[in-house]
Every structure is written in C-alpha cells, then in structure tokens.
Length: 387
Ligand SMILES: Cc1cc2nc3c(=O)[nH]c(=O)nc-3n(C[C@H](O)[C@H](O)[C@H](O)COP(=O)(O)OP(=O)(O)OC[C@H]3O[C@@H](n4cnc5c(N)ncnc54)[C@H](O)[C@@H]3O)c2cc1C
Image (cartoon, rainbow, N blue to C red):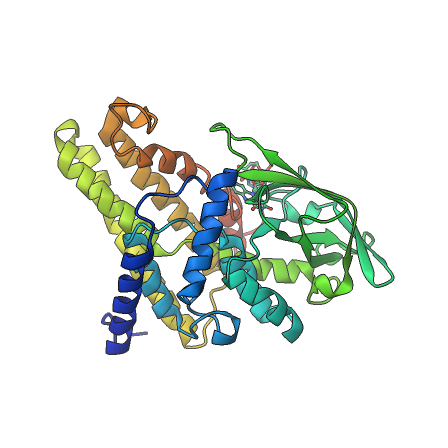
C-alpha cells in the first residue's frame, strides 16, 4: 500500500490550531509528579483545561467531548503535544484504553454516562486487572463477581493499578463463573473506587509516592448496568483493550521522537565523552524513533481504511518499549556519573533523563511483558509450536 507522506491543507491547519492553543495554555512551570496527591490534582486540572479547548481526545465524536477527527489528526496532535512539553495525561487509562473499548462494546447509555466525564477530566480511571497471582497469566485471576439480584457482589484483590491511589473509577475483570474454562468465566465491570466495600491502598515507590495501588474488594456491590458487554465476555473485551494499549494509542511516536531530539542535543554537548560505539547507538536510537513514527503513520492509514491492528500490537509494544530503553541508556552513558544526580543536586543537568530512565525500565513489563509478547508473536504470527 502506498503511503502519503505529506499532510493535507486541512491537516496543516489542524496542526497550527493545536500548536497555537498549546503555546497559550501549557503551564510554564512543570506540574508536580502525578504520582503524588498534589500533582495528581494539578494534572486533573490540566485535563479540564484540555477539555475546555476540546482537545481531550480529538478522535472522539463531538457529542462525547471530541472533535470527530481521524487518527492522522490525533498523531499530529500528539506531535504538537510532546513538542510543547505538555503534562503527562493523568487519565490515559480512561482516554486511551477504556474510552475506545466503551465505543466498541458500551451501550448508548454507558457511552453517554462515561465518555463525556472522561474527556472532561471529571472522572479519572485506573485499570484493575493484575492480581498477586495473576500478571502474565491474567486468566488465572481469582477476584469474583457474584450476581445477587440486580447487582454484582465483588470480592478479591487487585494490584499494580496505576493512578488508582487518587483515581475515581476502575475497570476490572472478575470471575463470574468459576466452573467455566478460565478464559470464559470472566466479566468486565466498571467500579467506583470511592465506594462501600472498595479499599484502595497506595504502594509507595522508591521515590516515596504511590504511583500504584492495591485494590481490595470486600463485598462491594455494583449494579448490573456497570457491566461492559455480556457476562462471560470479559476476556474478549479485555484483549481488545490490550490491543489499544500495546498498539497505537498508549505510546504515540511523538513521545520518542521528542526524546530522540533531546538525545541529539545532549550528544552535541557531550560528544567529547563518547566513543564511536556510543555515537552509533545514538544514531540508531534516533533512526528507530523516526522509523517508529513512519510505521505508525502506515498503521494509522491502514486502520483509517478499515483495517485492523491484530498481532502487530505485540510487535509494536516490543519496539516502543525497547526504543525507550535505548534512548535513555544512551543519555545515561553520555552523562556518565552526573546521570545519577537527583534534580535538586546543584550540579544536576538534564535531570529528566534519570526519571525517564527509571520509568523506561518498566516498559518491557507493563502492558504485558515483552517475553509474553514474544510468545504471542511466535505462536500466533509465526505459527511456531507452543513452548
Ligand atoms: C509501570 C507499571 C504499570 C502497571 N500498571 C498496571 C495497571 O494499571 N493495571 C494492572 O492491572 N496492572 C498493571 N501493571 C502490572 C503488569 O501488568 C504486570 O506486572 C505484568 O503483567 C507482569 O505480571 P507480574 O508482575 O505478575 O509478573 P509475572 O507474570 O510473575 O512474570 C515474572 C517474569 O516471568 C516472565 N514470564 C511469566 N510467564 C512467562 C511465560 N509463559 N513465558 C516466558 N516468560 C514468562 C515474565 O515475562 C516476567 O519477566 C503495571 C506494571 C508496571 C511495571
């Protein structure tokens, strides 16, 4: 399929509008980390500002707070967003994961109830899938939802739920039929986090902030209307969400292109510290970021023409997570011992690299580990026998 590498006039106008709006609205001072309470509130406020400008999620229909734009426009918006150094999206799990899932599986009433508040930053979402004994093997999950009249009663323990310490809602998968084959007895539910029988306990990380939380369901009741799709359809729906997570939406190329550009600037300043091998790695990382952008435009064009992403999501996930690691490893090597200085240290330079490096280490783990993605590619794309 031929790729159109130029933007239409309408797309260029869209870019200019996004750029002007971001220039006028992106906070001049970086916000506090969204993993702490104060920073979370600041990021929530930023989501509201975005929504007021109608930039919450440009691809959504207008009635849900979007602009009815296409995927190419979304990629353009993301490029402008990262170039403007705009804040991280505290509602990424809602906007990029649950939102498109709701569009596909939600009833009209559910879409009207949840999407506008999500786009407006009024309700921040967390993903409640993993359990202490069910991470890679997600279908081993044990949290249950037992039907009782017009409610489900939830019991169980979820863990590693990003943003859940301060979020308002979670989307979880629960076992509704313990007798069914393990992928079949699962149901996808939307659960308020500040709710009787739901207890959230933040997990303090090395920097002291609770970026994750555990969620305990202790006979929490949610009405049947909080179910997404049919009972027992949870696995299928969750895998659609995972496709959005690994595929196009969670990590757009602009994030890496901007990091690659910063790496080049760092290289120009620090090149006397580097040998030829590091020079080659910097060049490769920069080219990989550009290649990822081109590949994403190709995927977006295919999707816009009615195609689907399928197993490519796993290839994609491995590529962006390894690219992120490599970009940060190069920067850490260029900075040498200075890379380890905390931002408050007098001699700290480019301190964002350390924070970014630590987060990049998690890339091969979240959204399904890279080992598991490799298994999926081997079995389902290449048709190799199960290991
Ligand atoms: C930054 C971050 C954010 C996260 N956010 C969320 C969130 O919001 N919501 C949520 O529900 N979860 C979240 N998680 C949890 C994440 O989904 C799990 O950590 C991940 O699925 C791995 O599960 P586990 O930690 O139980 O490791 P395990 O499944 O115990 O795996 C341990 C190791 O064994 C390997 N392994 C396991 N099985 C196989 C196999 N069959 N073949 C080859 N290797 C294998 C794995 O690849 C891994 O290296 C997050 C994790 C991180 C790091």
